[in-house]
Image (tube, one colour):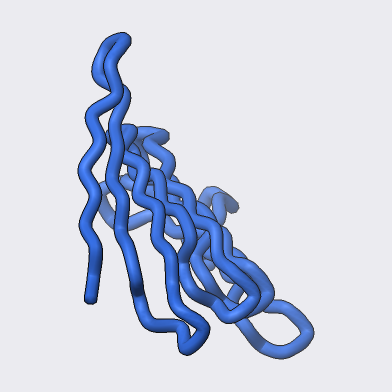
Length: 106
């Protein structure tokens, strides 16, 4: 949608298969959000109105492998051959130190 000043308030883009690959929107308070998706519809990046960026990567089966949120936390995931979650590791750089936590899912 374009407002009376000709500025896009909401924009969506789809691939040839009809899957959303890009979305941008501005709400009535002027805050914007931007999403980028891969051709399978998995969210690759999200940027909020403050410019904070979150990013994800996926394997060929669509399982999320990594996620970095806007606060600098990294999440890494592993899966078994059936696609069931095996491990979830979270880490964050704090000054010169790395804080790591590991969760094993059984």
